[in-house]
Length: 166
Length: 146
Image (cartoon, rainbow over all chains, first blue to last red; front, side, top):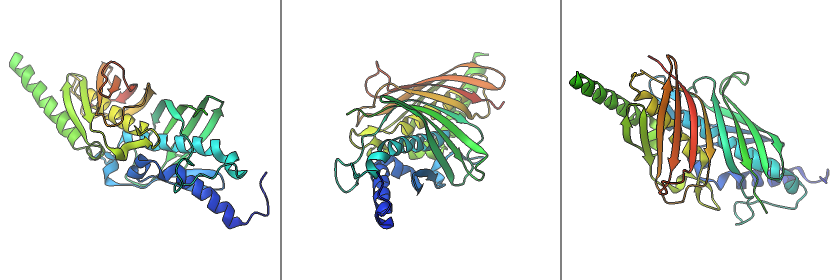
């Protein structure tokens, strides 16, 4: 499997290029201003605060739809990332945004349930998703989002996905 | 009596409409309030390639549809005859039936079908040009501030 003597920079470049291919190719992720931080295989989605994300201008609070989109994006990217990790590390695939058709096929969302726990503050938000179960056809993903305190979630969601076939 | 009802419902609709137009996120997505009537709302938004979620198919991101359905659900709550002052989403479950056809306008219709003193229950559907087969359906629970 993994070659322990592979140069560090090459390992990082491979992973970052693949993550970039997964994220940068999606217009809506760009429009939302969402980016991903990677530590090894662990991803954290980051949604920097922006005035356009506000849903309640009187509080102010982030729009529930923006929170939902953030969670769904975090879930889809994590799902695709986990699905391609083995192939990526073994060198079977090399997703690159610059090379058409090397980007992985995305799973389709079947359903998505958002649980709003507290109102989203006008600050940056973070999310991490976990693939709870992934079969050949279906997957279940849980995602948590927080702002100032990791232990105080402002929203969480469960999503079911149809895995890309072929 | 009838006049009073008309006035209060017109006032209620105007307040709710202004409220929705004042939501920066709804405005950024290009949402338009098409109808608002006694617990029912219709909101639509134009196609925009910046909202694509799957570059291979050109299908709009699920997150755009959830934003539209969440907003439409909230509008339905605010237009309820019991005239709530404000609302927030407690939870929202969205079922995605099919990908929205690229290039077509998206329309959501919501109905606030039950309210208690502090909770509103809403069902919402989203369509593209095909009004017979929804793109997505949603059910949600919302807070009510009286």
